Image (cartoon, rainbow, N blue to C red):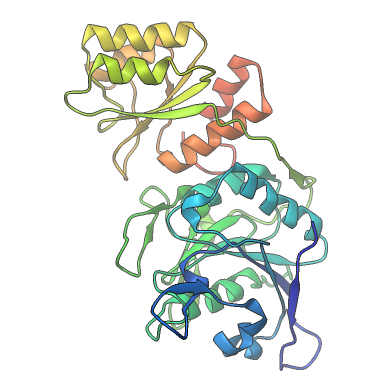
Length: 357
């Protein structure tokens, strides 16, 4: 697919300090008010300098690329994820880094999915967005975009990129993408990472939390995966959950896996009907991945009586993985492997730093 690209020439003298490809998918960030009325509409990226004049003062090459039809992030799907990794694959050797402008509602899902699809990534891929449109005076879009660009082009003393993984930058914090979760819909600090420290904090200076940043590794070959299997579902525990709800989920035609959102450290009801339903589903080959409803902490199957049975029948512990990272990991694993035991092993172990064991 051919995309329209807009190249920004920096004011600073040559040579420039690297290059970044900015991919616009849609979302609140790129919205402005129509001249007539108050309806928000996507702005024309041909006018990017008018909306973000600060980028002209940066000392690196910037190229903007917009999807043919920018969309609200609520409409993000598997096809868009594959399109994004294909864009990165096609431009991987041409650019030093990538910034993806994305709506906030599903940004954590996209960041998680891309982390799995981009194996042996050795360049920054940073997602950012905004809570207020760029056409609003108090918008957080400008700071988020400018700092994301600076983070994407940051290098260490050896000249290698400091960041070499999929991240989310928002409101002064750089977070590992597959550890992130949207927690605020009306505050600027929209994203949190309860189980993994921020990779960087951007105040007056940018301070990197280097012990937690994935190191630069030039050896392994960059591999892009393009197959995802979405025959998966969430099943969230709640007091009063009925057999009909559980059976309706576990008996979905073609279902391969379920992310079971449990209480606390991985606990669920011990009602016999529930235990039988889980056991029979696993006997039919459905993989069940245990993830805590809590934002912080981790699943510890077997620690309490209410999770001991889940451990015994073969429910896979998700440790401290987020629900967003868990469901996208299932899609990736089922798209890559057909052997049930290999799928279980991949789910139980970290692939891209998304969980601790």
